[in-house]
Length: 442
Ligand code: ADP
Image (cartoon, rainbow, N blue to C red; front, top):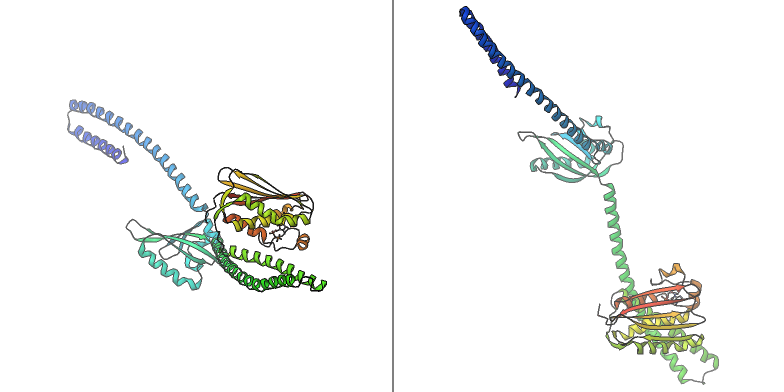
């Protein structure tokens, strides 16, 4: 029952009482008694109805109080959400004056919340951006949808910052614009990160360009150096052969040194040339079926003399059923030679051993093991990087470019394999090369 019905009932009771009064005035004494009885009965019924209605109203009042309480809790919840949101929330009227602002907004604008109310939001936009700001708002009022844009915000007595602003318009029940809701987020960190990424991308491009130029330069230089060196090596060889025992001993000695230095330089230049080719992605594999056992035997034979000079044992062992693989014989030989010459170079006593075995049906492994000086743990990480050399004093003593392992690593990768190293300082080093049996062109 609502209050209106309740009032109606009371009114009806009043009317009934008035009628009774009128009728009793003109009635005889017997009629009066009867009327009184009737009226008392009606009054009793009406009072009962009123009582019921009163109880209903009381119950409704209770429900209403509960609902109001619920609404208050919800209101407080939304207020807290607005108030404690991490981003700045601002409500302005249609002219852009601030009506409400949460804590984050006050913090962003560096103004206490209560002093923000009534201030035009545009006063926190730099002068040179205000025209754009107005135009943007103008546009938005016609579009009736949420808009996002970036602008600079100038807080009071603080440094300006980049902000991402999301704006939506508010309308009253008749569809008339009432104001704007603003979400303001400080994006300084994001902007800085973007700027850093741009700088890194630029530097990356410059580095790539520099790497290309370097590779190109190295290729040209190595080529230019190789031709005269070939002449030096060739002619000194010829001179030695032609003038055998005709030259005085010290001159023959000099020519021999020209020849060996020339050969050494040629090896270095070959390394540089190979490396620049790998870097420039210009190195291709000439794949063919080959016998890996034969190749290992031939390569170790080539190194035999060097090992013998240092009184090192050069051993090899094979645990392979089918020794035919598909690979580039020149490049595989180059890998083996690099590893073997290092092993001999860095070993003074003991032995160097090459082992070949099968890894399942489609891969093979080659290990080159020595009992030499070993590699320090801190050098192991960077050993395959170009121009990296371990112990500098020893390296100077042994020569080398620091390119051999970088080239070996690139070649193994081109073949679809992988290379790894295990070493103990003073105990020796083992390089493991794992390769597919059938190398495909990468
Ligand atoms: P290079 O031998 O021309 O200096 P490499 O790339 O072949 O260049 O080798 C890089 C460095 O790795 C060498 O200078 C050396 O310090 C270390 N190294 C390579 N192989 C061995 C090995 N078997 N034993 C000890 N050190 C090695």
